[in-house]
Length: 109
Image (cartoon, rainbow, N blue to C red; front, side, top):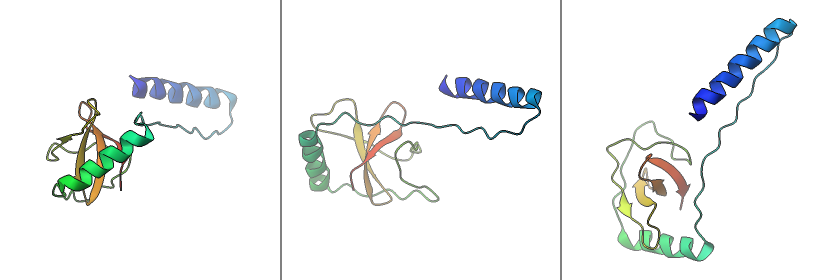
C-alpha cells in the first residue's frame, strides 16, 4: 500500500515537472518500524540472546540492517517478555525480527 502511494506521488511529481518544462529530482524516503522495547527490556533480551548461543546463519550478499527482509532459510527464536517479536543470528549479528514480515527491526550487536 505504501509503495503504491509513493509510486503515485513520484508519477505525479514527474508529470508536474514535465509540464513546467523544468528538470526536478524526486527524493523518496522510506522508514522502518523500530521496536518499542524499554531500555530494561532491551537489556533482558540482549542478555537472553547471548546466553542462548544460537548458531549464526550465513546469508551471502546480505547486509544486516534494520528494514531488510530475512530469507525463508533463517530461523527465528522466541524472545522473553516480548511476544510480538522474535530474534535470530544472521551473519554473526543478533537481530530482533517481526515474524510476520520477516523484517529486521533492530540489531542487538
